[in-house]
Structures are given as structure tokens and as C-alpha cells.
Image (cartoon, rainbow, N blue to C red; front, top):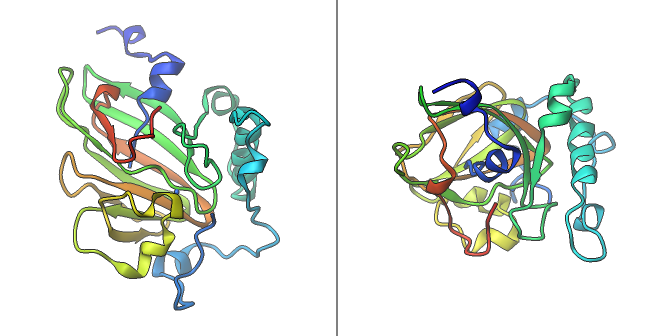
Length: 235
């Protein structure tokens, strides 16, 4: 396969996203998780919080440029460079759920190689923002996607299959809390790495109180294998 054939269209890149969402604060005990404690402290004045009114117009349409600017503001707070490649290639999704302040994401696919079977992705999440619960299935193009995550800034709560961790359930936005199947949470601090416990496992992630930038490593990702637990979610 030629390198040109490996390049996805913007729609394909956005549609293929599906990786394993208001504000996630400390647990009800008032004690920060180890991952939260390991994340560099920011005062409440430096971390912006958002409502859906910040992102939707009167017709309920997501305003992509306003959403992107919120992520760029977060990147500046984390002292991350904003290259022209990122400005041109970043995309945002609310998964057609109309709750972007709590359930949504931005990202950029650095590559997605079917011929060699590997994938590189950067995930951007605002404070407390959740990626909807999903799983990856095998398709005619390859096996179910396997993936791992490494927070670079901020921290995340990774939810997957396993015994429920009730102390972290309140991190899940209320709009999704009764829907999700995966209720085992592992907080991840900067440069900690976790991965799916099996292919096809249900999973999702929620950003901590500062937001998060997460590097994802994975095998080739085919959008046809993406399944959401929320029947209203789509890309």
C-alpha cells in the first residue's frame, strides 16, 4: 500500500476515533487520588471550567472553532506548543450527544497504518470531560483494536472491565452514569501507562480536574469496528 493510500480523509479520521468525560473533582471523601496528587497543582483561577452554553449555538449545533479554542487555551496552560500541523489537523467531537462540556473530546491522528497495523493518536480532554464508553470489534480489515494510554499532562480516570470501584463512580458524568458497563477505574498520572485488559473490552476515560493530554498507542483502527454502549452516540 502506498503512503498516500494510508492517509485518511478528515471525515474518516474523525469517524474512526472511538477510543476508550461537569468537572471531575476529588472523591466524596475529599481525598485526592494518587494520580491527582501527582499532577502538577493548578489553582482554580488558572483552570477554566465550561458549560454547554459555551459551545452550542441557539440551534443546538456544536461550534467547532469555540471548542478548539478551549483546547488551545488548555495547551497554553500546560505550556505545550501549538503547531500549524495541530491547528490544521485537530478535530472535535460531541458524539451527537449535545453535552460537550461533559462528554466529548478533541484529537489528532498522527498515523493509522492498515498495512503495518499500527496507530498513533493524541487525545485532548477538558476538565472532567469523558469519551463515551465503547469497544472495538474485528472487521474485514483486521482484528479488534488493541490500545494503551499515557497521560502527558493532567491525569485521567480509565474505566474498564473488572470489579467495580465505587469510590470513582462519581467521576462519570451523570448523563452517562447509568449507561456504562465498565465500572472498574484505574487513575493514571503523567507518564503512567495502562492498556485494555482484553481486545473487545468495554472502556472509556474521564479527564481529571485540570483536563488532560493523552498519547494513545494502538493497532490499526477501523471505524467499522467501533461500538458505543450509549445508543445515541455516534461519530
